[in-house]
Length: 349
Image 1 (cartoon, one colour):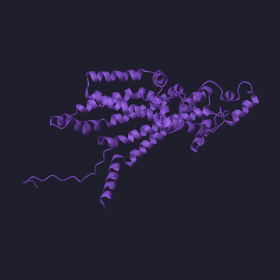
Image 2 (cartoon, one colour; image 1 turned 135 degrees about the vertical axis):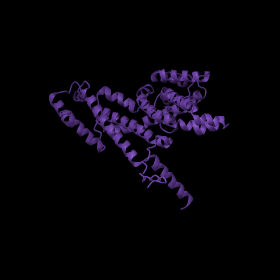
Image 3 (cartoon, helix red, strand yellow; image 1 turned 90 degrees about the horizontal axis):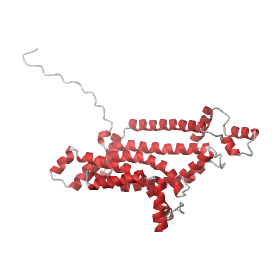
């Protein structure tokens, strides 16, 4: 067998050892079960919300009893709640998320048009949070209980306590109105123009969660610096950069990946306010409009999509932990070996 083939087989073996098939299937089954529970919860909450979707669709003038009955029959609103949920779930499994009550368009098309913009905004916000939170957290951990540490933590608290709409307005006023560097609203036409238009919203969204990654990274660095193997390596004269790269940063991989999974949920929730401030036609703006109009199919589709994204991120984090830290891998059950009989002492039969 050639050396490249040996290397590929070795990597496959490490992946199988870190991620056994039973472990992966168990995590997938848990994610699917959680999505089912969330879909039921969202459907039930929308059913108990005040208002009548049929009256909202027809308006005040055309809400005759015959028209209301026709609309309820068309959208299965006259059937029991369990039957309505079964209809919606079966259609969703076939890719049909229903029809918007407000516009009459397919929900999948309406959500798909805005999903790309929201996804771009979330990924850019995550990049901003990682670029600021992880380096500042490492710096604060290396200078723990010093002036630099206190200053960095103070900045993180300020960023965390600043509402997204207030931070967005301040950034828009400074970098758009005063300096004229970046556009203040809109999504742009794509490419570089899209990136310029999403710069301020991404910074606004990322700053709101930077403190979370900063705190987690700082705590992980402080804990790793107190480990015996790190102290022993420094005592032996190993360069500090080598210790930081090989031991400290590798030990912080699990807390940081856990923080990324938590941060993604906050980023998805924060897009609602940020898109309103910067007039971005994304999922957040669509959600506000749909809730105001009580467009149940669109709200259900968006809630299920956000839940699927959050659950997928948590699933990816769970699968990444055994790869990052061998101590978290599922231990193999040792095969039973036959007991070795004890040696019979001399003089005894």
